[in-house]
Length: 335
Ligand code: AHM
Ligand code: MG
Image 1: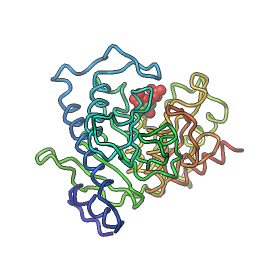
Image 2: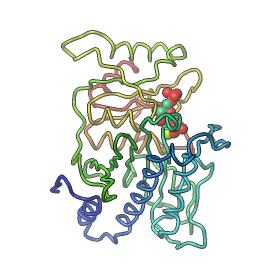
Image 3: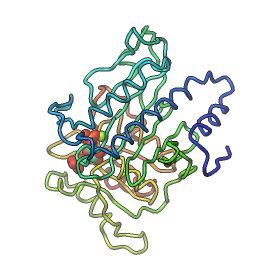
Image 4: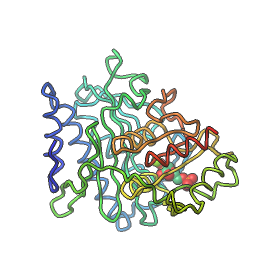
């Protein structure tokens, strides 16, 4: 498919819709609405310091994590943007314990299921460091008149689309519907996402490794060995890699996607199952990584997209980035 720099996101979504001659336009409609929601969040993030919207909300989410006001704002924005469109059967968010079937007062019969982390990198909100939104889209698979948990607990191999927005020095939207990865930059003048990074392929060679080394005291010996591998001096294989860790998964992932690198969040004594969430952090980014020629596994060596989820807020370990670096990590972990 021809991809021209400067294409608007609206045009790009239409181009992709034409790849499916029988498409009803519902999927494209859903993506447009989602993109508008992301623009609203980007606008609020950009002026957060001026609007008294920084700081703690005084509440906790289902995972017991303290919510920030912007977490709550982003979550409410996406739910209210998407609930009345008629495209969705239900939603699930990092910030809500249960699935959210579309309420009776809104159009019913939507075919799609949307899961999201409304504001990833919460600990960086107050200090003007890049944060983001991550989402996954599945087809509704149950016969339930609304939706049920089964519709949400689908492996990544069943994804229809995934992507993220990163609110950084500029706002970018990166997504895939299975035809490669497209990256758009928000032009604040016209309020539209413009294609700036067409057909993203992650560099073959990893230049960066990203991990919270503050957790190393709680790592298994295998993880220490793995991280030491990337820090070893070996000119032939391009080591040592440079260390970069922002603490916002979406921003760390985005840098490594464009520049070449590997991100790792292993299990440790504090988080024996890993910290990151499978459904709306690991799976959507694994899909983007694979579409860009990269790979993503957990610390047992399982491909992230093959994991069959058991719980909505399931946690996982995550190793994600360039194919060679991830394969090397798998070898060391399974030795
Ligand atoms: P969040 O979705 O509540 O922001 O939590 C997930 C974040 C990721 O963005 C990031 O990779 C990780 O938690 C950082 O964790 P740590 O501070 O333990 O390094
Ligand atoms: Mg997150």
